[in-house]
Length: 569
Image (cartoon, rainbow, N blue to C red; front, side):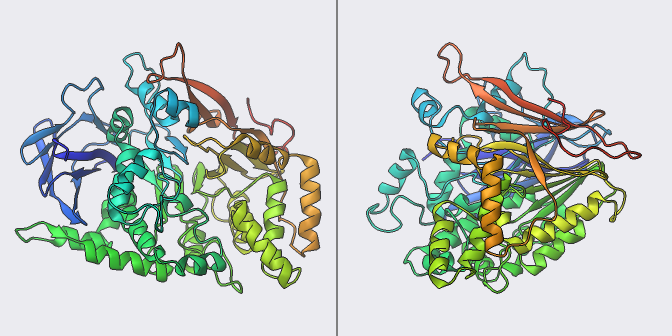
């Protein structure tokens, strides 16, 4: 048992002009107090399966201020950590008119940061980024938000350290084996992911938003009805999905919500309204909620939307909200599609859409996935359909392209915004994604209106095997595109409503990407961690790529993408 009353956190979550939400996990039932310059805010913990959590709402702040804070648990100072070499954690409220600065990425495994861990998984780009921000010599501004786009934890591909924990409590030779089984194991996995000293400091001072992808639950989660039925036939899946969604609500989703959204949340209302003497235990309520979310996806929304003055960020759940009925197959069910459609609007300088799965893949891969969907649904007969389904699950053919109904719907939405049919056209409609374990920038070929861009940052720390790198790179080239387009047409797949090209990448480094709205346009850059002089625990940050999307000329439009994409390298 840890000697500190604080197990995990504090984590800076939702922050706006006048308030901040700070999350933590404590060792015991307790009162958590956040203090700033003589003022304090408190919250009691709530319990889930023997673990204790608190979310402290700090309100009544001024816009555009930076305020150091402390955390006490039952009167004991727990943050800043004693003898910490890191700067004071701060709350930085929004406002003041400064342009949005946002970092994003996905796919991060939790292994050691020594020579062994760096040798197998590369340098943790998030940790290198944290060390730079914490350095006394740092002159790089902190982001307003870090957006994690899925696979924050790997419930199915566990590390040796996680497996030791599992072996100490159950027989790992029985299903689900080395994979996670319940909430207790998820709690330990999140602790491994977020307890490194540098990353913990970063998460205590920079706001974060998060959305799941498949590995937060299991590889290929909800890829098809066939996959789901296969999982439901196992002895362990029900426990996994309930624990996965329940822990996701606690560790990730709770902090995504604004104070107003929390006030409407059924689980949070129970927590906030509790006035008994003892700690509220929501274990059974949360498990029932998670069960319902799995069985009735339309009963709860994991997607969210935020406006940062003149930039809108929409973050889309592209996993739990799927329609798996082959007759109505869609990446987003009808209710989720309507929700997204209502928020795909102009009137902003930039419209950002965060989706764990890339909307625009390399064209060769896009056509392959659309072909496989058609074949799996019977375009070439029953025998071919079985082969198509096996291929879909074997090589993860499950992105927007593999759900053509949803791809075409979103393409129409994006085009309408870019053409100024939904308010003043923004400078860009930019999709931010992860999942694929390589990073790219692509752009739709357009002669007028907004740019439509796909930016991918993956992985933060989980590099793609070299053999698969070649496969991914090949599908980025023209010959592969022509061949897979022929395949798609042979299965009667409709052609995409527009053409797009890769303008930078792919590259396969562990990276964290950032963007900033600048006078020259939307600037995006990717950075990786590198070890110099054998200093494994103190990596430096190296730029991998930078692109700038200049604003279009409203009189002449911008030209179709040529090599380089019209982007500034």
